[in-house]
Amino acid sequence: MTGPPITVSGLVAAHRCPLRYWHDLARPPAESVRYAVAKQVAAHLGDDLDPALVWEELTVVLPGIDPGARALAEAWTAACRGVRPFPFVLRDRAVRSERLGLAGQVDGVAPDLSSCAVVRATEAPAWGVTSADRVRAAAYALCLEEERGKPLEAVLLLYVPSGTVRRYLPQPRDRRAVLRAREVARRVEEGRLPPRPPDAPCGRCPYAQACAGGARSGRSILC
Ligand code: SF4
Image 1 (cartoon, protein in one colour):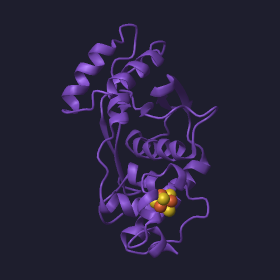
Image 2 (cartoon, rainbow, N blue to C red):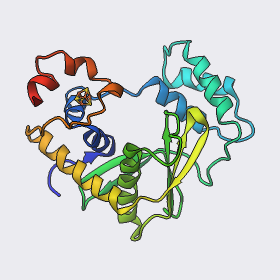
Image 3 (tube, rainbow, N blue to C red):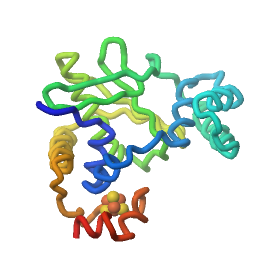
């Protein structure tokens, strides 16, 4: 592939909606408080999960963090108290696929590259894994299998707010979704915005107001 790689987070944004990727490119989103809390809880899974320690670390990671977020840290710490630690250390790890032109940072990787972990700051769905998380998992798996030389055995998704771990093995449909999202992202980068998908998840999108507002927004660009 030529050109800079598409990030896994950008790929997921493009999968959700082309315009969301366009917004993200224009104003790269900062790490959310929810994600910072989820990461810090995930870093301490096990019997000694201590909300005071999690909060102390959060004040280092995000100086000036809203003290109201302490309640979130305590609730999610309680939710994850029964979650068994992963069999490997959760340490951000850069991954890349030269073949597909993808790059990202996954939350943890087994030393033998047989599996990886993804930390989510959302409730687990009632069953399975959400469409966006399947694409996320498949993208990380594709990057790591290029390095490993064979497919992964599992992607472990930790949904911190509900204290749930889902083990997922990306399927061909997920790999096809990665290829489609990559194509969408490339078109957006070239300034060719596809039409707004009829099922764009506007109700859960941080850009809903911008898109509803007109000038240089979803309506003016896409409609
Ligand atoms: S508000 Fe809707 S159209 Fe706009 S970026 Fe979000 S999902 Fe896409």
